[in-house]
Length: 170
Image (cartoon, rainbow, N blue to C red; front, side):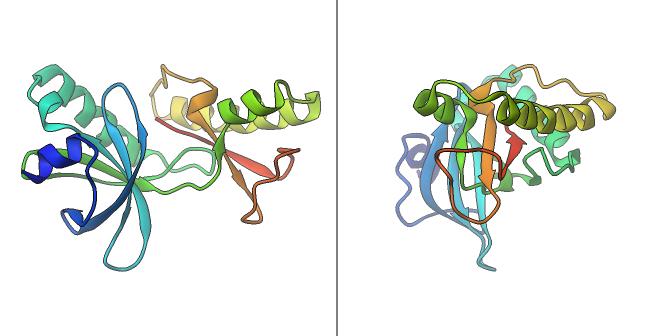
């Protein structure tokens, strides 16, 4: 019952294992992403494969492989994954919760970036991609929507990215 509610986006008073689901924060081709809280108070993001999608063996295997590989990545320019799990037929990946905006959102608002900002952001993305490559992996879906800009001082500066850190998502 709860799995079907989650797959339809209903998250009020819902738990996935020990994590309390707070709200849906994203949706991809394969899975939904939810903001959740651990009993310790840590806020995380949980990527959830809907049970209907998990019935397809290839989709489930791809999700599980992606999740197992994501947990191996440990770099300041790559989103951290903490745990792979399954509860009552719902498969999920627990990741760090990031507050910021994607490069796609910045580009929609600003249209283009000055060269100094663009070079700085691309350099950070390349450092993250180097780490991924050194572990024998390939991202395969790098795009502005999968690059999150995190403000360094807890505040998003809308007119510059010079104090932001890039994190590769997905």
